[in-house]
Image (cartoon, rainbow, N blue to C red; front, side, top):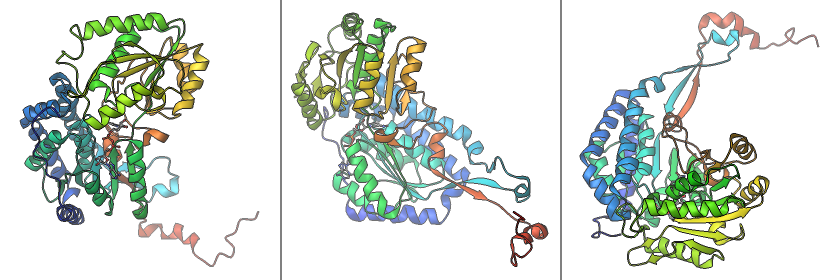
Length: 466
Ligand code: NAD
């Protein structure tokens, strides 16, 4: 975006096909079954990420003008911690599990559950946290013993180049490869047989992925977007609401799948919440967001134009912000007082720095409105007393909930959507679980034959008297 044109070459169709057959063949040769082999790959990946820290920071700045602090915390540290957590726990996770709740006669068969790798899998990344959301799912896939093809997002081209460098510097090329490309290359990948596809992106492409997977009955994980509501009851603290909600929409300039899409605020609190937003904005960006080194840009002209139309189509009143600069791909954090949940800023996912506020009569109205927009968003952000929050949680559905906060997700908790925000979860232990088949194994010793013989015909005399 803001830097030189990156040296991103899309993979040729021949190269894509060769990558897939090599990784598939390697899986069938059982190379990745060895847990020590997986640990070596992950440790090498850790050091390659460390070695490329400066490249990661630079690429994030070139693609998104992402502030260095955000790149360090949410890309580099996040991934390094993920690898450490995984390598520390892997021996425990791969162990055969004792089967629970087994009747006595079956216990004699030593039942256990093995965590088998799925096979040759595909990870399709996204642009907003290009490193975390591309290499993160791959860490779990490697830990679980799969061979992996990784497709970074072409929308963050500088990051895509660095992801490839990191992988090539660390991972066994026969088992793991990076394919570069856009829509055609993704379609070429999707035309092949996979043992699992992990996609992070929007619901429209999510549907294309699910359809492409269907002929092979390939399981998919869909980490999709969310039209996430924040519900602010009259018992909420307006200062806390404003500071946290502003943060949720200014990190990465609001290009964050877990950020709130709109706020439903009790009418008694609206003026104070708006006042606190203005105060918080001055504290976060004393010279304004445009001059701040701590505020990202929109990824590309397409997304800039999409956001501009959303705001143009809104019937709301802009209370703060609204400035845009297409040349710089800058959009100011913008607070809009909307009058209807049907406003374009509420019904579509903005994935940008818009903060629409809708005044509501009470909690019941807020809950009913939130349930009507996207009934299963990725995140939900209730603010207020414990009782109000409990009521909100028990009357709604969402991928996750963060009470009295914005966008927060503890890195080792399972993360994923429900319904329209996707399905399948990863992070922490779930990153391993999502990539294995739990394979039940029983073994019937010869000496059990006298008991097992009851199942053989002739059945005469074996029927119950009932
Ligand atoms: P997107 O849906 O545009 O997906 C982009 C990817 O899909 C690219 O790799 C592209 O090559 C491919 N693609 C696009 N059209 C295609 C087609 N017709 N056939 C095959 N492949 C195609 O998503 P995006 O713009 O990268 O990301 C924005 C969305 O991602 C938002 O909705 C956001 O909420 C969501 N998101 C979700 C999470 C999560 O963890 N749940 C995280 C980040 C972003």
